[in-house]
Image (cartoon, rainbow, N blue to C red):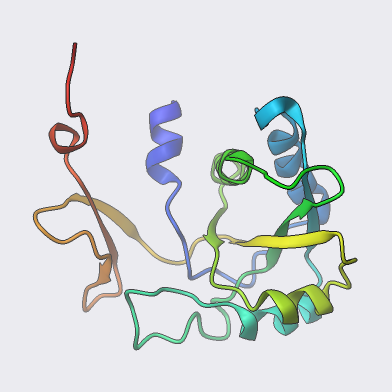
Length: 189
């Protein structure tokens, strides 16, 4: 079951914009992050939930979508996220969030996948512009955005031969090469 969730938890970048996600559903996924581990149990992460269509539209131009697909400018109308989560660090709580952000985002996305949705962790964000849009106070630092929606693309995992760059074929299928297990385990002792 866990393996199935992890295999389904891909970086989806195209969504069915007609399928909405409620703020309550997003909050339930954030609750999974709240219950997850935190370095020193400091819990410095905070979140902003965005499900309002107009605010989603305002955020969209400040997101970079897929570095390896340099010709692609991001999802078209009708394929855009219906929700975002701003992943934030409260600098009054901690200077360092260690690996809390990765743990939290994985928990959120596994919850989304289990509910039939999907998302993408996005680090290519105009932090200044989005922070202004979200009216964030000075002590809150924007770390990541998570785009959410009902996936409208097929993403397949393949074994990497030499190149780990993801790509799309002529049918629009998104291919993600992963290094073989034998390559990433250095030793068994």
